[in-house]
Length: 491
Image 1 (spheres, rainbow, N blue to C red):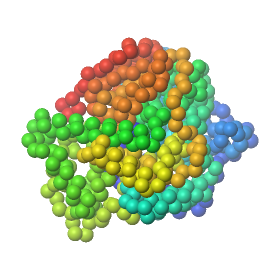
Image 2 (cartoon, helix red, strand yellow):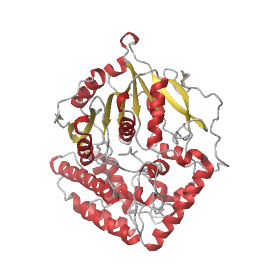
Image 3 (cartoon, rainbow, N blue to C red):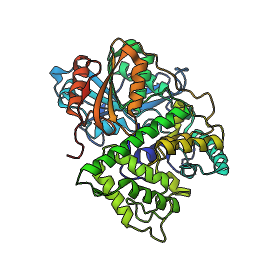
Image 4 (cartoon, rainbow, N blue to C red):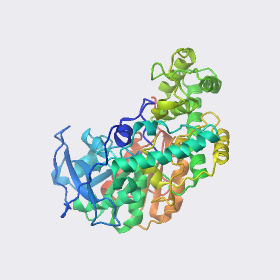
């Protein structure tokens, strides 16, 4: 579901979104008596071959005449103006990925035909990046636990999350309470209108698929074509959310073990990979496992699990095998900094929490309930135990209910079937999510299965890319049950 960088430290996107220190008060949202309804484009500062702009939208769509702020956008014009068909809007993942950065740095994820025919447009969703980011104190962010160990820790997490929410609201202003994806979907429709498009052509990736799905629910007659790559299932409760993520993560670990068994290229080829991994896990529990990416730091069991999961996004199986061999042979320095508590708890921030916790209601009654979830996850994912969903649940503990955008079964009645591009062995947006969403869409969706590995398929599988391009260019819907063969990710 989430993009993961090589480092287990704060991602640049997450740090930009939620970890600014020393903000003296909420940034002033731009209030205009006659707000602009169009986008004024200008050359981007970072790369003048791309265009940047802003669009004024309401802080609260239920009060459209109230306070407003500027949504940041970027676009690259169609490379063949004579053949131009319109605009293709890309929905970034995360939550917290920057669509502006994606476009400015080249948006090479799309093929030549799409870039020839479409202006490629994206944006930083509200509350992230350049679009009035949610601002919080880093010391409060640092206090969020990776995994809660006992009842006292559970109580501390509840209190800490409450302080964090209040701090972010005070520093950010009213927008802090309106960064849910339903509001972002209304922003997306404002973008469509400002671009002059009667209907939306959209490609969403990972968390960006939730944006697309909710747009299709709100504005079904305004969808021209919509690709949802690595789909998020926004219908699951706390238990199902945790379990489906655990099953997907363990499946990816099983695929890694199978690759090592057959590939001499694997640094662990010919060895019992699970036994080696179990040894590393025991060392992480004792606090003497060195982080291969950050000299002087130790890995907690949670971060060891995350190290593997981030490698599965590519997947980078050779890199993971090399890391395991390095960790196995490297003793923890005596003065190493533990990543199990304190400031190092911010080492992994998989969700800019303000957005995520307004999109999901994931209640946990008490520590006994929480510990029961952890025991069940250890049975479902015995090698990893802590899918990234664990941190999501912990960081949203105590969120006031009802949340602005709670889970529900989809109600989409679009004129054209939405195209779900799903990877069989996706470690984050699991195939189990894609099949669930396809069932909810019924005749209003078509599932295209890539039989390979990794988080995403368009840039991995030429077969998927051809099908997606045909669909976006000509609304040519693949046959139901269409499948694309696996491509060796380390060939």
